[in-house]
Image (cartoon, rainbow, N blue to C red; front, top):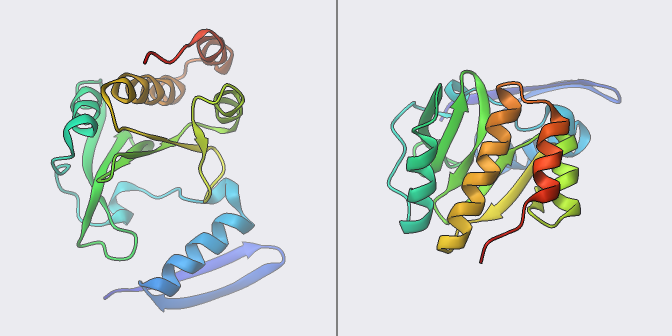
Length: 180
């Protein structure tokens, strides 16, 4: 397994350490996310593991994955298990070099949405807070209604990345209702 060097340059953490990927690696990643949330979980696709096509997901998550893959400038790839980058754990989606989000094999969405939109989504209970990083939310894909909602959430993130003003997205959030 490849060694990983982690450098903390944010006071009061001015040190570096090298360790092997595994449980301790995960604990350090979580610790760094808590200490410096604005930098947490920002990884390039190449840093996550081998670049391979996304795996087949369950029925409802697969519908979301296939829809996202039709959007302009989307790169879809395997999302690797954080503990072992040889084990698939879902599908990653990028717009250029920016992560849109990913869908885990269990149907859980982790979405990079930015802090302003995150707060608007949480206020309307349209997503849940992601525990390991700022500017991220989570949502499940367990039903047909969840498919439409997850596509809407991913489209919010996509529009943010391609330059839609936050005010427009917040207005969209304010008028959105979940279809059941």
